[in-house]
Length: 219
Image (cartoon, rainbow, N blue to C red; front, side):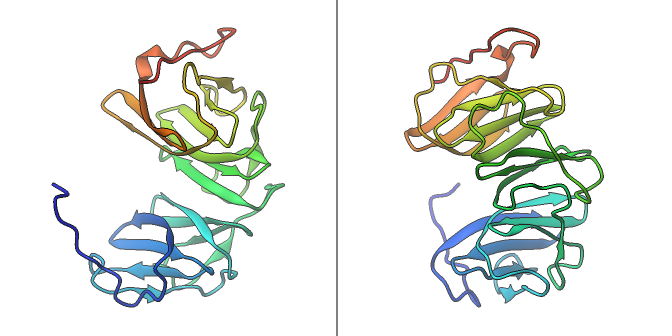
C-alpha cells in the first residue's frame, strides 16, 4: 500500500494544507489563509465550509462523537452539521491559539501555544487548564491511550499524565528533539514525529505517575 498516490484537490484553491480529520462520512481539511474544506465523497470534491468561523488557520481537527472540532489561532470551533455552521467553544480557555486536540471518547484535551493543556469533560462546552508539571506550555501534539494522555511540546520534550491532566511527568528519556509535532499510538507503541525524525517507544515502559521520574527508551 502507498506505492501510488492520486491528487484529490478538486475545489481546493490552495496547495498548502494544514489539518486533516474525519467525522462520520465527512473529511475535513484546512488550508493556508483560513479556509476549511469538507468532502463527503471520499475526496472527489471539496466545498468551503466557514460559516460562523473566523478566517484563521486551522492547525488540528478532532472528532468527538458526531461533532468535529477545529483548533485554530483564534480558538476552538465545533460543527455538528458537516461544517454548515460552526460554534465557538472557548469557555474556560485562557489561551486561544489551539494547536492540538485529543479524545478517548469520554473526555477531550486541547493543547495550546504558550498556554499548556486544557481538559473538557462535557463535550467541549467548557475547559479547565491542566498543566501542572508541564515545563513547556507550547503543546503542539496530543494523543490518548485510554485514560493516559501524552503531550508533545515545542523545545520541551514529551509528557505523560495518568490522572486526567492533574499532573504531568516528562517521559522524553533519550529522545533528543526540539519539537514534537504529531504522535500516534499503535500496537503497544507510541510514535513521535519530530524535527529530528520519527521515533517510537514501548508504552509498557511508562511507569506509574506517582514515580519521581519516568523514562522511555526511544529508537
